[in-house]
Length: 158
Image 1 (cartoon, helix red, strand yellow):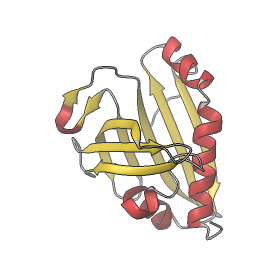
Image 2 (cartoon, rainbow, N blue to C red):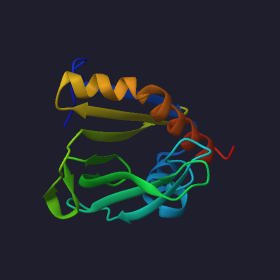
Image 3 (cartoon, rainbow, N blue to C red):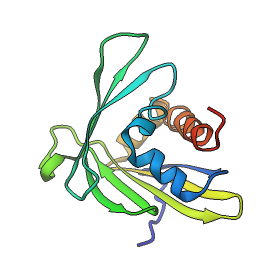
Image 4 (cartoon, rainbow, N blue to C red):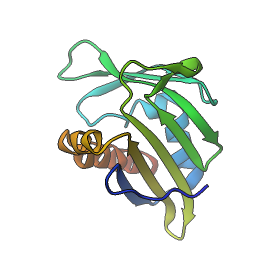
């Protein structure tokens, strides 16, 4: 399935990561690796649930400034295509349960590139207002920072 970009509803980050696709996939799917890059440093991430199957829960917590871990993401995986694609949404929680405040669906796509892995995070929103709010909240800085942290981890620069 090919996604089309809707500038009224979508935000995207792309990056060439100089590491094999298998390494990027592991960083997305292995808890110990994922927790190292998922939130912008110096904040810390804790995985509560990461059931890598359609309908599986995807729940993270964040600790900023050394404080207690607070809710960060409560989502559901929609697709898990080995080493190619992860799709998750916070419109649903684990077990396909409707969420109280749906906000976005993210498609993480990985493909081979001459220099390593072509990485794309395509984030879709239900309305232009939600898209604009996400952008104003710092989408490009936040998702860009974690993409850089992911690259540093798998490129061996962390």
